[in-house]
Image (cartoon, rainbow, N blue to C red):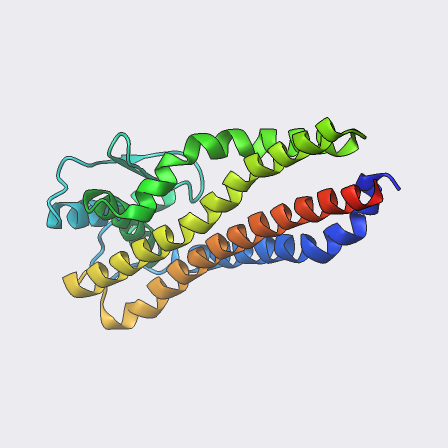
Length: 236
């Protein structure tokens, strides 16, 4: 049977649960952020102010804090030493904004400390950018070719896509550590009071779940491709 159609049942068994987990995780983080975006912090500091305070407290005066467009598009650029915050974080004095801003500043602290997982993740970004879209294409082309060359081509595509799974796995310690740094500083600095910790934890823990879901999706897709290829070989 044609491998694409033969793999539908396998896809549902392996990949669909991971996709559903991803949708649920994204819904959870969006809901948590929107909920606590309506709850103002006691200090009244905006996300940009919190990020700057955290950076300065750790001697990172040279790191710029800029506003970027998009919803939850917040990120730290280690190559340019720029922390970019979305409007809902940069300008807001909510507890959700406080958690996200401190989390992103946590990545700058990792960069300062030469945190190994962050360095590894940054180093494999070019391979991921290529492998994430080119890998599946090469894999599928090789899969439908009834030849030894086709099988070799499929393995190449599988290896290229494997960089995506590796990136997702390395991302987990990077994000978990940034969250740990954010929570510690927010609480120890007095930016967040005792009664506000649950809200910050809810936002950051929900965000962490999205990275777990992304890793499971990448691994399950890689496994699906591998089983398709092995099944195609056995039919031949």
